[in-house]
Length: 150
Image 1: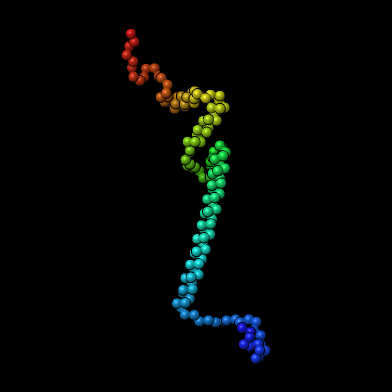
Image 2 (image 1 turned 120 degrees about the vertical axis):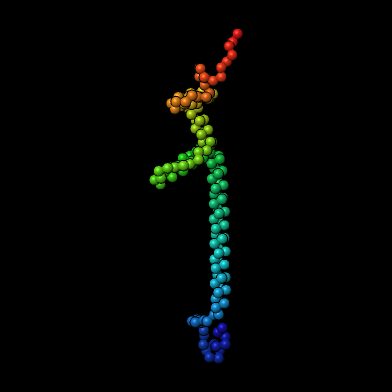
């Protein structure tokens, strides 16, 4: 760029600045579409990278929770604490059967019974408190009658 002006006139050009350019409307429109497409492409790449990283972290967390028996129950209780801190008056949450089994297993260990008698007694007491009969126990004077024995 300097060669045509430096030798004959002794001028050296350091910078060229363009102040006002008149572009056709169609060219400006196509340039803006191209820039918008590039922004959308970058956004999709960033979103895909974020989803990939999140899936890797979830996989790591699932592996860690699978290795620790009580981790799922602790995570459930932590979720309840987090939700209750938001001053909601009602908390509706599905309660997994595995959690109930975990607590049942823990209560059997602490009560020293492994044959289910403690659970049966508790269920009977619960039924009596509600004014119902426990279907697992026999109640005299109810149910099908037996033929007289000989």
